[in-house]
Length: 51
Image (cartoon, rainbow, N blue to C red):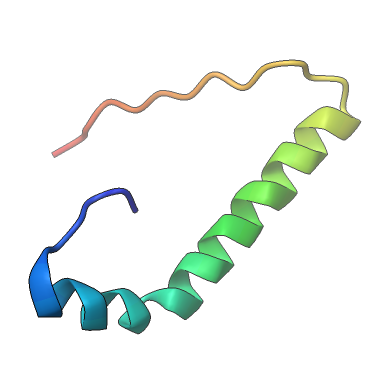
């Protein structure tokens, strides 16, 4: 999500993924809300790559 494509390609490319980003961010927000409702005060992720 945070990677940036420069120039004109970046401007137009961003719009292509707007709906996917919206869905992903909503899923993340739902996950965080559920954790808070269950009494969790922190979320620790495992961000290692698996290839």
